[in-house]
Length: 174
Image (cartoon, rainbow, N blue to C red):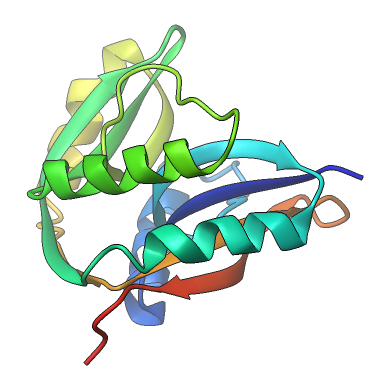
């Protein structure tokens, strides 16, 4: 049986609560399906969970922890909607990490440009993007995050939500 997973960077509980609340305020009718996070590998299906866990443990050990700031409010457009997010000041660190993971998970290739981000509002109609960005900028949100582990998220089909399933610590933990 195939299960759905994605790989990302999870937030500390207090930050997760804050950013989940921000997401809810811009989606009052939208049930959050995943905790606040930074996606490295978009959702994919995988059959052999043991193999996947082994494949993810190795690349995590290739990276040292680093600290990143998320302060700039930005957006990107999809076909029908846009997404508003906090942008990272360490784009290259995230890109190296994502590329290593893509090479590790056999047969998986990311589609489109990789933009490391912390989503704040999704499915924003294009004409509302500037207004929503201004509202979020006025919140003066920022996040200083120590990136020291990968998180494997797994989808619960019964509940219809993503949950943190497994953590892979980076090397040189202090």
